[in-house]
Image (tube, rainbow, N blue to C red; front, side):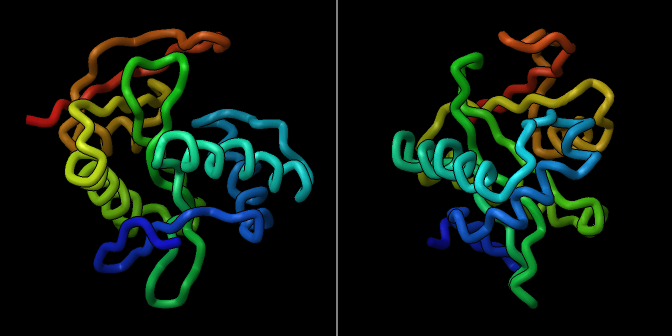
Length: 170
């Protein structure tokens, strides 16, 4: 199910059929370094995580992380979407691309469309964004999207610092 479309991208609901790509993405060294090691190493575990993560969020909240596909060839590039975490007051934007697709503006394009979707379709009044202080590209992207750094926090269940950004809609 397609949720968001841009000039070059489709953001659609991830399905268990996407488990091979999802498994590759979440085990990529850049994902583990900049986001976290989810500890998922099998296709079955990836399918379960898709069911219990993005698909459960979509059913419960009406939004989730979406698979980012390139329109030109249908290539799966990564994930971008919205997450409601128990540890944050506001819904946050999340994104991760495979390294070979970074630097071509895909994260920016997907994130801009996701912010617009959160404002115009979901009528959210504010979005959060979280990233590692060491993740220069994600910090830069959030600032370029108009997010403001609000605090450096340690989220519940975590042990490292996290930059907490916010973007209010007027």
